[in-house]
Length: 105
Image (cartoon, rainbow, N blue to C red; front, side, top):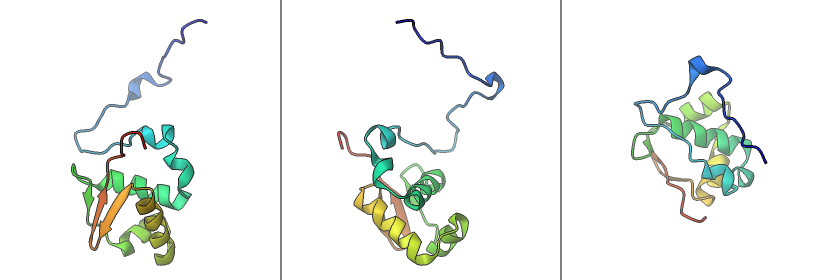
């Protein structure tokens, strides 16, 4: 079997880790988290990962999150419940916390 040559499609736009803290753990796919969450829950998770600080904390209100993601309050709360059940976020008004993925989950 021949080795696959890995070449970027767009060399002038190689992604680098930004100075601001924001990343998505590849284990979300490998350990099947994405298959256990709705699209709304995954959109909420991505948004929280993007806006949270280095400790995973964010103070975005339900109203602001819902407006940005196009979710009504009930759907946003359902998405939050899914993320909490998947052990991806913790929430205690008014603080959201993106949690690290557990090892071997």
